[in-house]
Image (cartoon, rainbow, N blue to C red; front, top):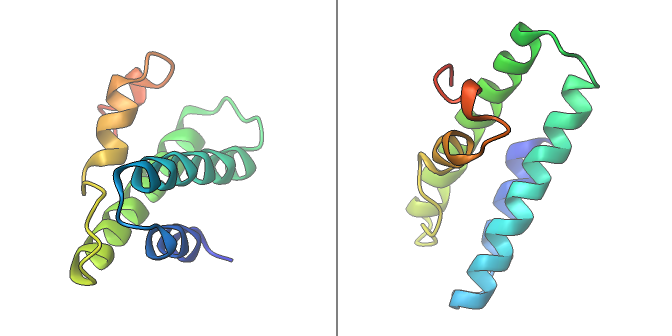
Length: 97
């Protein structure tokens, strides 16, 4: 299953309660990082990391737009990018995505 399909499925299956939304977002973040881990496969090459983070960021935006159109817009369009910029581990990548 493609990343966008996985994220859309999580978003579509979440109940629209605060607790369920928090769990769905947590699951979406874990799904994204599992996908990144598989794609990067331990590479320390900055170009590989940046291109994969950009791909995920674009996917996140597309999913956010789709969920919003479906009346389930509980994730922010720039949420992944903001998460990366706020993360100490990935802060340096935030300026590239």
